[in-house]
Image (cartoon, rainbow, N blue to C red; front, side):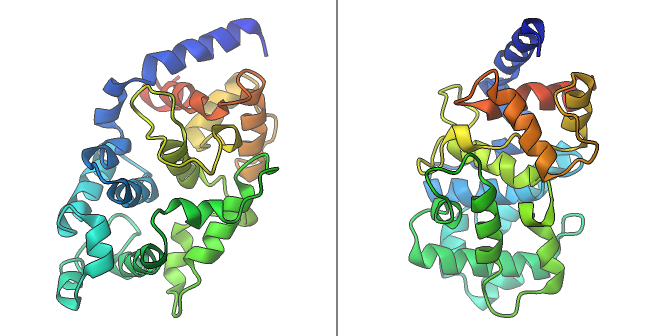
Length: 256
């Protein structure tokens, strides 16, 4: 990688990693909350819904938060059957009420036992892990550990074991883990290091990365996301995921 390219990517990170980025990005939804657990749940739904038009993603996530009385943590823990009826018409693309009710069941189980959603990921990691592969595979198995998991809901959570890029969950981990003081990412979680994060990889980011010869693999899969992250570690080994701002902006916002 040339010094010129490194400087260009660093420049793009600085350009987009600032509070003005928040308003038009799904990260704006968790930013509307002040309680840690509300941020975690709102952020999780915003990330899971994050495919397609960003305005639609934001609006649908806000709609769901309103249905949960804008208190998602309390709703997940203390809802009644009558409360759940309000959710039976909610839909976002292929995500339907069956999926939503299972997600809420998982959150109720987890938050009944744990203070933060962080442990749902971090408990599967070892300090020597170079990335979040074990965390994501462990989370997938843990998330679907309840009885009577709907088959259709399995598709909404990715895992490296399925060779998915895990773009949405990697983006969610970026939000929760990175803490650079710039105002976009929350830095709520401390058991996962920014150095272990994987750059969220989708078709837009892959297109930009291939243009700059940052990845050589032809598939757009988990190993390609790892390959891209290793390239970014060559510039900043402690915070490779910050380059998501540059690659995403070039691919989606600037249509590079």
